[in-house]
Image 1 (cartoon, helix red, strand yellow):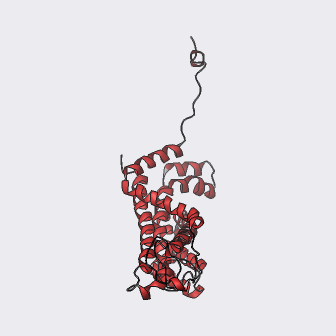
Image 2: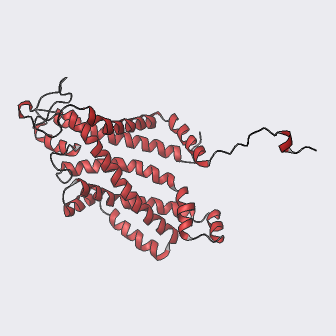
Image 3: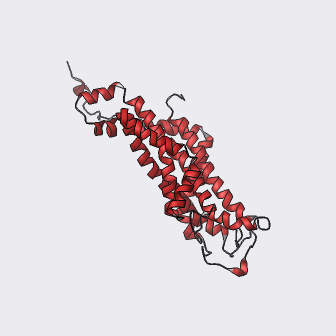
Length: 299
């Protein structure tokens, strides 16, 4: 009787696809069915391209005043017009794109790092550790986000880096709460008990078996939080506590143009639309990503 190897000697041995690849294909398949999420994703890609390539393509100076060309309306020479110092608004918005994305991603990355760490430790160990950490998070959550960020920036001083720190701090409790809840659900599963019985350390269980299985809510929260971070940073700059002149930050541009908006609406219109576009893109993409990563939703 011939063995299987003898009957099919030339048939190549194929490896099964990795779970990561299969999950990625499933998520992308669901995302493609959500037109709003795809539009948001394309907008985010466009914003990244603008932040990288855009500054190289602009021809007007970013910070150099031109007092002979103040309050010029939109034209072929100045697409979005000029501000009260004669600077080209389109050029400043393009250069401000990288600042906005930096604030959003840096603040959320820092907040997510500490929030995830606090949440997973609190959810995994529980008892007194959980009580102490969650009470601290409750204190931070008791303050409205913008007020907490405002207080932090007031203490640290107005600057771009301090805005990142302030937004990161008020983002920590949200990540901690979400990760704690997910950890409480996962740590009771049988496979966690099995690897613990095999002698796995707590660090290995947390980073190899718990965190990979709770990444979906973390990714969704991070995407949605970027929109909040951008909005908060713009508000702080509008109040004069964020990026300082002549930095082309959109919130600061709104603040500079508010005194002239009735006579020269373009000074505030275009920076405002830029903020709305970025916040809207991350919000609708985050909503679509949440639906795609939800295992309860079927195709």
